[in-house]
Length: 111
Image (cartoon, rainbow, N blue to C red; front, side, top):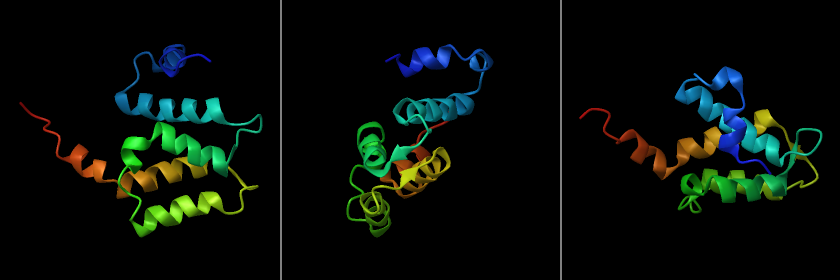
């Protein structure tokens, strides 16, 4: 498969894109690279993708009730599939509860 950075570079509109635009395009590319021909992911594939591609955000969250709720929902009704909109909601939800978010907020933005 083609590396995400190379796929991103091939999108002409993003050559001068902002960091935020590139971040969302990257999320979309990661999703699309794993989605089935109907542009959906099984719940087990979603869980696996989060564990491999979003590890630093979910690491250490196992004891949080909201995290357990999200992950257990991926174990239930496994025949149901996740669309891109639901995938992005999952990413935002996991980011908001992540301990890494506080570290990101503490990053110095001035010299």
